[in-house]
Amino acid sequence: MKNTIKDLKIFLILWSTQSLSQLGSAMTGFALTLWLYEKTGSALQTALLAICSYAPYVVMSIFAGALSDRWNKKKVMLVCDTLAACSTVLVLVLIRTDLLRPVHIYVLNVLNGLMNTVQQPAGDVAMTMITPKKYFQKTSGMRSVSNSLVTILNPIFATALFSFAGMNLVIYVDLTTFIIAFLALLFGVKMSVLEAKKEEERESFLSTVKAGLAYLRDNDLILVLILFLAGVNLVASAFDAVLPALILPRENGGEAVLGIVSSCAGIAMLVGSMVVTVLPAPKNRVRVIYLTMLFSLGTENFLLAFTQKPLFWCAGQVIGWVLVPIMSANLDVILRTTIPVEMQGRVYSCRNTLQFFTIPVGLFLGGLMVDQVCEPLMASSYAEGMLVRLFGSGKGSGATMMMFLLGILGIVICLGFGRILRRYSYTEEQ
Image 1 (tube, rainbow, N blue to C red):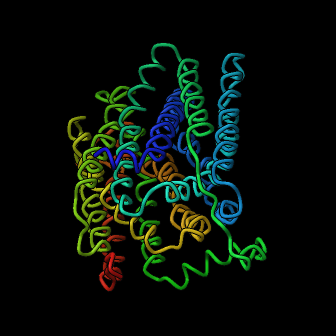
Image 2: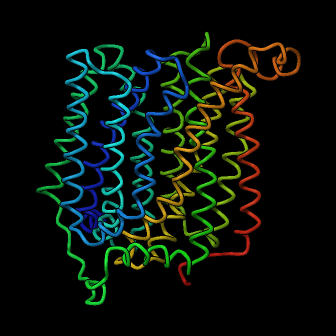
Image 3: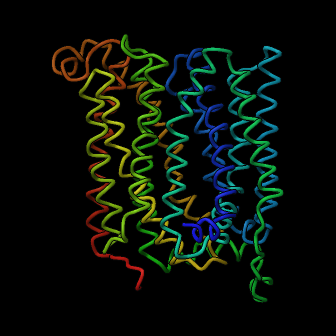
């Protein structure tokens, strides 16, 4: 145990403080969602918050990896964290002067998305650089644990602080966690510098970008996995857009219930993360990836669509998310052990563009379908009879219908890609 802690000392410093800062940022994001829904009552306008964060991330990620591979990883993380904190300070100023409007939040989310675009591949490569290979699955599980805790705690803390003192206090907490993470990274984390090969030093910027795409083209297993998870992300992001519209308008819903239901996803991920840290390596990591997603997408959406009680909403979240860390850990091992470390920044960024471009699409379509199709349909005379019996009536019934449609879409995606992925297997001996 002592040897493990010694081997992972730098990782533990970086992981713990960055996770704390992530919690602060997530709390601000959740509180802004509550603020915006109070102002507009629109699922689509609320979803635009996340869309504005993900759109630049998806568009620019393919170039960010090339920059990340050329730049000092630690400096990239420090600069990006600082600029993101400056945007949070600007939100605070606008709130205190009573000038904050939805458009301001959208613009600042775009800027934060750009910062995250550059920081994320740098952070991923940094984790590889400071972690011994034998600890990859364990540290991936630990990162899933921290992500789960953030998912559990941020809606609870954000709702409590927002209800007690408004956005100001939430932002003060966010800035405090940023300072802690910044100082820990600046003074407590040392990273070795990867020596670039001479021919790589002569590569042009565009050649570096093309190298990441070429790697994916020549490694079809990784490319198919990425495209599969792009489909999963389409369903999951649409789910995220629909969930507030399903819970907030209900008589047995509201802000507190939304916070609790959202936290259940984190509790499930925490359990899954703890399990994956002690699980032995599976015989076929690829099979684990697509079977876990088939189970998750094939149960959660239907539970939320056909139940009207918060207890069942929570159960759906637990069932839907408990296997996600197991999937993520197996994918993480495949990527880290297959892709050469000097290529990881650019390949991860190409992966981000391909795997996550469906997130803003799903958020937009989820919000649009609820506002413009499902809710008007459930409010019309056409819904009388079977649709009302299936999905209820009143505001929120359209979101319930959309959950049902997402369940069908999720199963179709998993079964379709499952037929392709069954051709592949992966073991550490490869």
